Image 1 (cartoon, rainbow, N blue to C red):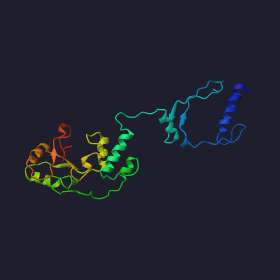
Image 2 (image 1 turned 60 degrees about the horizontal axis):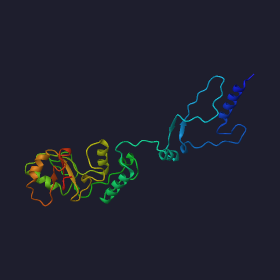
Image 3 (image 1 turned 90 degrees about the horizontal axis):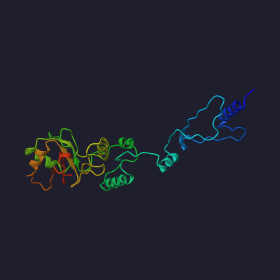
Image 4 (image 1 turned 135 degrees about the vertical axis):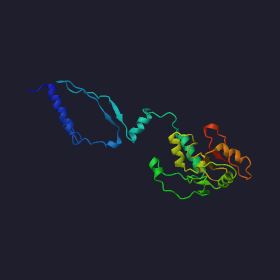
Length: 237
């Protein structure tokens, strides 16, 4: 003879098997799409001869999806923002500054959208000098090139290590933790004077040589001090 507890367990198992098609003696119970809810792992325990608890069991963990359930989790404050992460307002300001500077930003909101953005070809107002002082073939703002050419003839023996950068390249430096201006706000991302910048080796020597440069457009270094000694631009920052 089946005990009341055993009969209750069998009925419960039968109801579980019927979920998704029909309830126990009732109408069909439709499944909710998995992409519309937050999935929960529920920990249950039972003992021999004891029926499962009748009340709802609190979830032991919640796995959120990017949907309305995730919005609820955000609204409840059940998430962690990494220390130093920019706010939405800061990101919007950087995007606005980039667009104001004439920088065309890739569409999409993922790293892949940046990586898959086709190159638009040579950037206006830049060239890639094939010289001993540009061994890495870096694109450089047009107005900076004659300054460095003059400096190389008058005693500077260094080389260019970085010139024009795209927004994505600047963002990569930010992500790597290297000291650099936020993407969209760097002189390396612009070319028209007073925008434009280069990083060089032998920066102290270049500063000394440029003190007597006779041209109208000055290339300034040393402003950022030990934190970024190799950086040169029209303003030094």
